[in-house]
Length: 228
Image (cartoon, rainbow, N blue to C red; front, side, top):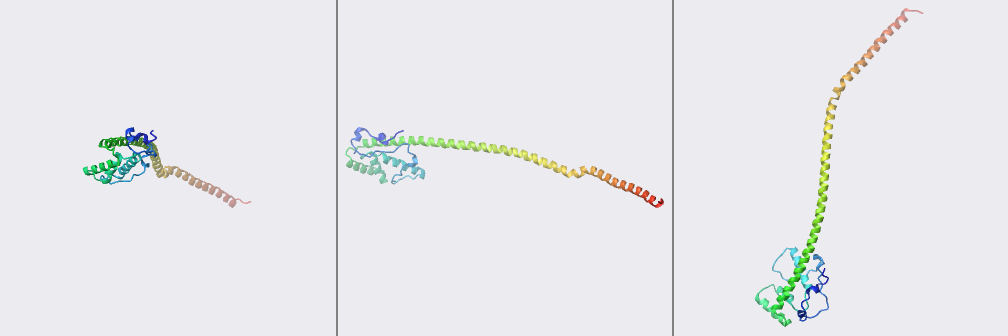
């Protein structure tokens, strides 16, 4: 992991001698989250992007600001052209004349070499953000997969339980229907036995009455015909 962007963005000793020195270190750590970089001051844009793209573009612009080498080089030339909003021959010539007035060592070769330097470093940052983003994406997808598997397992378990409950419900419904059928026939089933018992009870009452009547009749005859 690179701790200091200055070590990445130092130019050759020859180029470094041509720019002014500074005591402030350059910092743009690659391990810093993409969404935590400060937003760079905007300059006129010709192309309109969606908010997400604009946000990332501002991150790169801020990154360029933070790694800008001391003195005048391609980055200052780039900012000059960008600030005009016009990219034509006249603009480039005027910007180049101004650059030469600020630094006599400026040449087209030096500017293009510096441009390649900045592009290479932006590409390095891009590659590291791709790696960082892919790791986050992989982690998120793994989390999603785990949660999805968990939910699918719970759904399967619940579905199995529902199936079992449906079987049990069907069994209970069958039992209820069977009991209802028996209930509808219960009077008919018990009627013969009830009738037999009732007939015997009536016969018992009648037999008692008959026997009692006979005994009472003899008793009355005794009382009537036999005197003490």
